[in-house]
Length: 289
Figure 1 (spheres, rainbow, N blue to C red):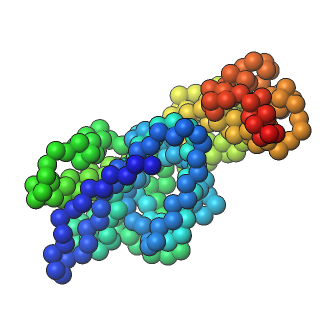
Figure 2: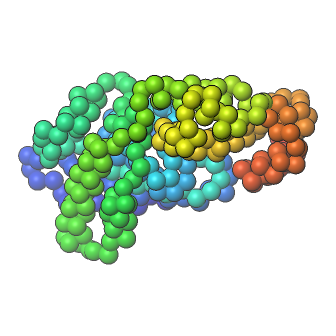
Figure 3: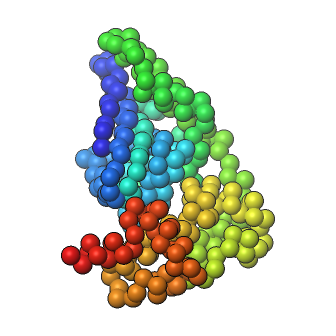
């Protein structure tokens, strides 16, 4: 994992520490699991610029999809990130709580969020990860590609640091999922239904009809809630389960394929190889050696 740090200007005596900005990028040749273990409580923003980042925090799993972000508080401890083979890029801003209070006093969404932090539980500012607004994307890449040096660079990064904080908070403040509580409940129940019924035909139209939503609203709401499309979620769940079954069960590949809802073995083979870069048979052969 390549990490590029962007240093802010030194803090003046009597002023709180501002924070720091990091750009993380990597091209993984194989599936990799990282344990993110902050030495102290972390407060800041995560922006996913490329790839899908599945994470587990305190035994609660989620995914930060390409083009999404959020502000988070993570108490000292560990966050597990499981990345599949491929390219990843993300931008991170760690921010000091006292600096935020001094910089932006009286901002409702920030005050509400800061009142929740400091305990043993992680906290997300937005229950559902918002999309990164084009203006925020532009500012992030302006930081990454800036050509300034010395004092000018420090001043430029200080300005961008504040700009990104304000733009991100403004976006969170006005972020709306476009679903009422009942719709959110239905979509969450459908996600659980999918996870428990991978062996059945899971047609998107059927799933939408099952909860009395239009296909368009169901798909848009699902992606807003989970950062991925319904089809991609179903495929990912099936492939993850397939990999476990190939390693841990004595079922034949054909039996595994049928148990995960595939009526054609060839489709299962193609999907598995496209997802992991190797075939089901190759996985079994390598694990058996």
